[in-house]
Image (cartoon, rainbow, N blue to C red; front, top):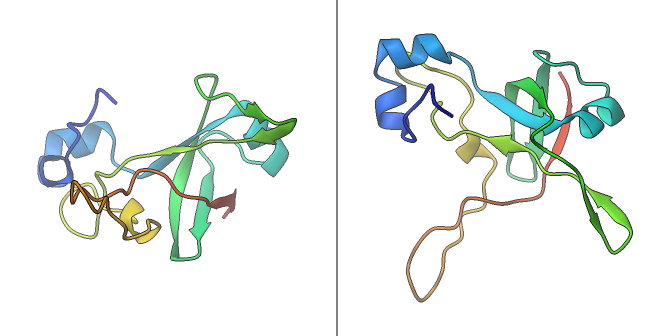
Length: 120
C-alpha cells in the first residue's frame, strides 16, 4: 500500500499517513464479497479461533479465488499498521494471528491463518 510505510510504529504516529488511510481494511475478491453479501466500504468482522476484529471491506479485482483440487478457496489481505494507540487506530490484525515461529530461524510466522469474514 502506497499510503503507509510497512510499519505500525510510523503509521500510527504520523498524522499525514493516518490521514491518507485512517481505517483498518480487509482486501477481498469480488467473488467472495458477492458470496458473503459484503459491499465495498462496508464494515466487516474477521474471526479466527483467537479473536475478532472489525475492518472496512475493500472489494477488488486484484484478489481472485483459487481452485485447489476442485474446491474454491478464497484469500483476504490485511495490514499490520493499525493498533490501539496513535493516530491510525483500529483493531490490530495481531489479534487474529497464531503465535508460532520457525524453530530453526527463530522467526515468527504471523502471515497466514484460517479465518471467517462476514458483514458487521
